[in-house]
Image (cartoon, rainbow, N blue to C red):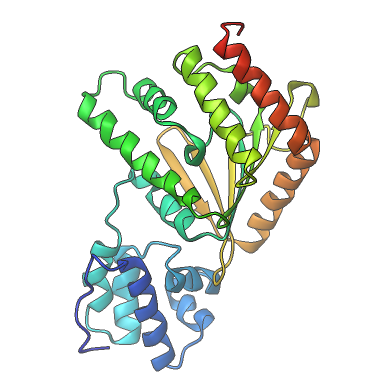
Length: 278
C-alpha cells in the first residue's frame, strides 16, 4: 500500500477506494471493528466505506492513513472519490442508492426523484430556486434524470414506494405535467418494474407522520436509512435505528392500499388531471 498509485477518478473511485481500504486493513491484520474503534465509528461504517456505499471524509482518511501506515494514500484520494454532481446534503445518499439492491421509500409530499418525469423535476427545481438561471435548473434536472436511469435495469434494484395521497393531489407544474407524471409512475407499476402503494387520506394517523423515509439494502454492506429536510439530509447506519425505521416503513405499507388498488387510483387521478377535473 505505501507504494500504491493514486486512483483514477474515471474508474469508479468510490469502489476502488473501498477495495484499497479493505486490502490495507486486512494487510494490517485488523477487523472492521478494530479499525473502527480508534476512529470512533462502528464496524458497519467501515464495511460501508469498503463497499463504496459511504463517503470517506478527509478527517477520517487522515486517521486511517495514520493507523494503517498508508502514507497519505487515503487522504489524497478521498477528494477524487467524493466528487459529485449532486448537492452535498444528498450526494452520499444518491451514490448509495446507485449500488443498493433494494430501495423502500415513503414519500409524503412529492413523487420520489427516481420516479420523476423531466417536466415534473423541472417544476420542482424551479419552485426550489425561483430566481435561478435556466442553466442551473437544466443541470439539476439532468442529474435527476440520470439518477432515474437506475431503473433501466429490468430487475435491480427492487424499488417499493409508498406515496401519500397528497403526492397525487398536490399539483406540481401544470395539470398536464401531473397527468404525465402519474401515468409514468403507473406504467412502471404495470410493467412490474416497481411496487407502488398509495397511503390514502382516510388512513388517518400513521407511523411516518414526521416525514419522508428512504431505506436502502446492499449486497455486501449493512442497510442504511436516509432522512431529508429543506437543504439537509442525513444517512443513518446504526443497526437499532435502521431496524426501528424499517418497522415504521412496514407499518406505513400495511396501512396503504394494495398495489392494484393503488395503481387504479393513480391512473384515475391522472385522467382527472388530463381532463381538467382536479
